[in-house]
Image 1 (tube, rainbow, N blue to C red):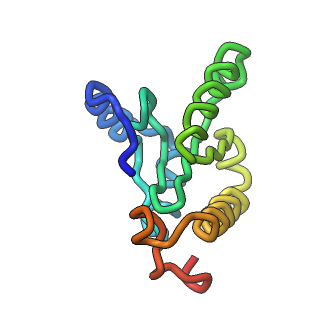
Image 2 (cartoon, rainbow, N blue to C red):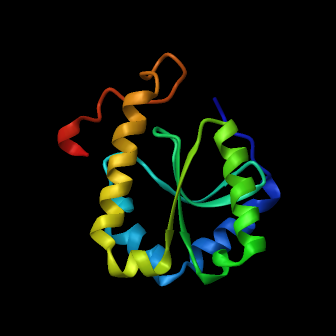
Length: 139
């Protein structure tokens, strides 16, 4: 199933990829880029741009700066998460400081979420997602 997106957000997503935060770059270049299950950076989904998205696990990973702690931003993020969950997408959020201080812990949480989500989703062929080629050993 293809997810809805707004094509007018694609140029902004490209700009965000070029101007990623140090924490986003660290997570991308030192973990997600070579992860055995494909992740995409700054993926447009619905009317949003997700920092990282794994279609096979239907998982969004967000790296949040300090502005996400503001009440308005928290409400916006909660609404965004509700909408994404309607499409079967789970959202993991990590503050910038957590990525900096506990990088291995963040990677472990992402790895665990992908593993869990991949076991819950139907195998490839039933709805086009999932993968029989990914095993416990290579996650």
